[in-house]
Image (cartoon, rainbow, N blue to C red; front, side, top):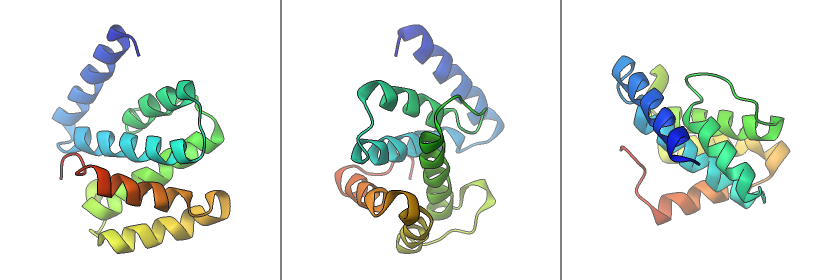
Length: 129
């Protein structure tokens, strides 16, 4: 991502954070989760970069990513909202949020999303929690 695109992205996310506190960290978590899932599914580096940007901006506007990428972002957005109580969702335990994700994602992706998110949770501390 070029410096200019990155600056624009950060400015947009900063403005969203002012309007809705917690949005910046939520967007970062959704991007991390989405990229982890897409990596497990074999997305190319170029598509991972596009997915990360779309995931970071998912609360601002829809983006021209393919159907599979949009599904990954939607699932990761809801997963994060459930586990953190963001977007007014009732706060769920990590286990309940993962169970929901497994139910929602299994028909299209099998166990890959849950395996990816379990790996992310063991490798890094979730951003902003």
